[in-house]
Image (cartoon, rainbow, N blue to C red; front, side, top):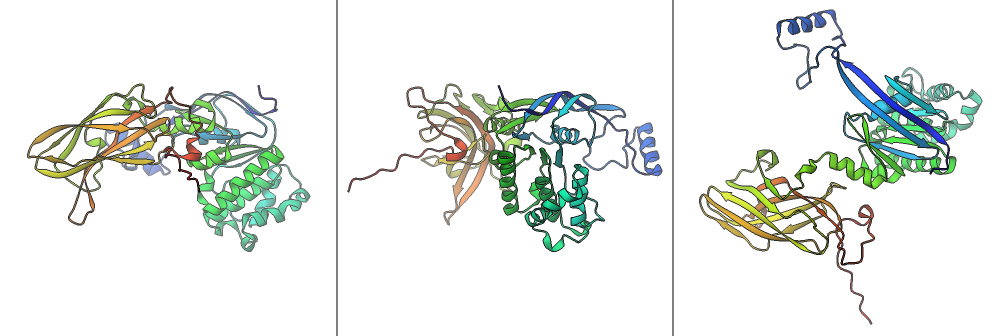
Length: 427
């Protein structure tokens, strides 16, 4: 039970759009499109790669969102493109209205939805600061008390009396964030805009948001595809998928679910048969093919080995072939370690072999892994030459070993490989 007051309460919010009903911008273009549909021909005004929707086809950007956000919370909102993140923030910022549902807000909202939102390009930076303050209901005197801090934080003092239409996108973001963070609003909404700024300013913004949340009790809603910033800033996270909340809670768990949504978790199985969609040879071509893989993908625990079989074929003679297994925790999507085969393999013309390996998990920590499998050889200069690769090769879930002391391990802080202890020798 949360003892803090509600900042935002969202009840069964839905947002529906009608697709294919917006004109092409000119009468001539609209007539061309109409005639193409009438005659069953290709629309000459549709961009290459664009999806063509039927007239009045409906799309649910948000489909029944229920959410309670408390004062002082730093809520991360993540999900893949088209999940409904920006639509939700636009509804909360009153840029657009929901099709159905109720939103109750306790406090003023200051938002940054995209670069330049809320700025008049003809006004100077200073004038836009006063304009944004007026939009929030602040008097000119109240804004004047904060304007020096805003200008200093924005790092735009040299250009503050220049019309913002001459600002770069990075300067826009710096000034917009400085305005949003310093003016008197109880709720701060950020939609991926910090990615435009440089790394030093991003860190400065994250520190400022942490400060205003902890010291001033301001509520923050933050959308980003950068999981490191989500992890640094937020103390709660929701995952959106196809307009619905599929998870609400711990940040690390939310990130794991978000990253896993980009993968087909049905791939966690005992048998894999590869087609060309798995392969990425970076321009290399060889007659070697990894065709199938088998493993026992159940009840895997830390500190044990598990068998793995590869079915590999070669159309031509191929000598000195090695294999490597690249382990990538799905929670981070960052390669953590690599395991190499200990012996080379030789193939004759049109030969198929079943190769057995033992995968040692002694130094891996419990989590879900993706493993890419690569076959390679070395040239006369000792350089690796990739012959074949499957990406991803397979997935497996590694659990705690019940016979060992459980690892008190935070994978984001300490990584996904646990090395042997350093030996302390007596003098």
